[in-house]
Length: 79
Image (tube, rainbow, N blue to C red; front, side, top):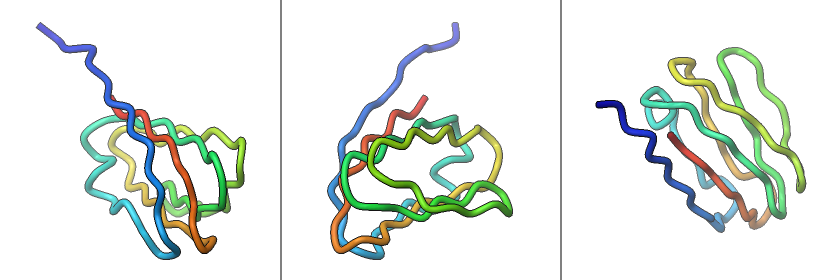
């Protein structure tokens, strides 16, 4: 049977903290920036996510997340 379990984690990271690409290969994730900013890379496309932004990181596409501000609070929901 397929599991519909999801994990939600709130992270506060210093500048340069990152979630590497292999983490996102296993399942989709939704990122919400609560404060600060983060550089998001999905495949070959990169952009800066700011407070209030919601970003969907699709399963199977190399994606990476790295904090850019001195500190950033992020909410990540992974499936």
